[in-house]
Length: 382
Image (cartoon, rainbow, N blue to C red; front, side, top):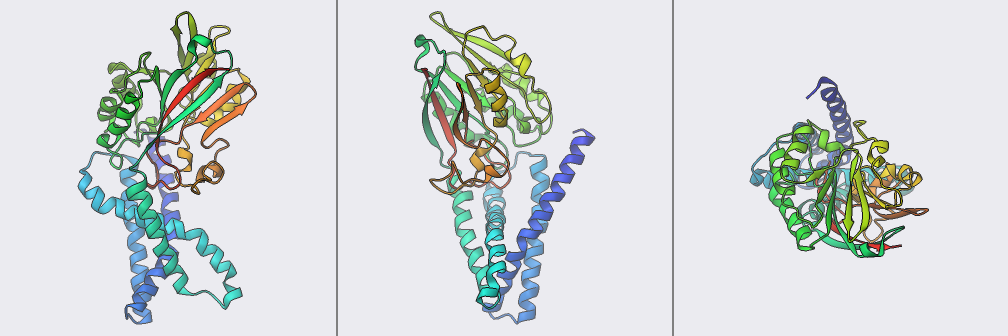
């Protein structure tokens, strides 16, 4: 890893550590209250809460190092130690906003009570246990029909299996991802589009990722775009491995798909965040009058694609926020804090964007209100 990359990761790690310390403050109060209820003197209860809070921050520091350079590990210890820790860590995040609001409103109720923090943390544990240990395991198949302007009627019903943000690594091991591949293959698509972030970080899972993604099958081929996490390490070896498996990694380039004289141009831009994306090159080979499907890991490139006359853009990156209000995830999700386009279909003029909800996770390995999905897109002559 180059020195600038190490420095960026170091800064990011310090920020995460500071956030973790802040979010553990309500937990310290909750742990102290529990110790007091179990019979500890007040001073000892406070000391116990403080020690447990410090332990939680210290453990996160070790987890952050593993996140920065992911490596294969036995899943048993991960299931017994790492994932329960992330239940706790996520519960601390869960408590942050309610705790702040409670402290602001507490003068109206005669001052704050430690019981609130204990109840809030206990609720967070239950919710986050479901999100970390259960919800992220179960994925769904979504079927979406999209009208594409200029699509030849001979291509009406053309089916693309869309996968994104697999984030294969220690917390989402290759055997976990094989289920997604099997489901996509069972749909018998005409083409498969993978819109980036196959990797969590580092290079140690590259061969396993190529083996898993290399199992995808479609009549007209499997087309991959690179995401920002695919370059958290060195992306070139992964590209070579995928191509050796017969998958088409498109880097600012495209290809024309033909069926009975009808044509569809499928292209992709490289990663935006590492400044590899080049829309001009990606569209340079576009035949005049032929509708275009653009793979772009970053959904925020959609306005540019619409301005360039790209009929359909497929993107990922946001994971739909990973955390959203159930049944209202389109409108209330964590991704809205940073992105204009979060999940599902968007239209601008004659252009359409589909943002995939993702399959894996980054940050805390949790999903709430946003199910992982294998998506089958059916194109319709518009």
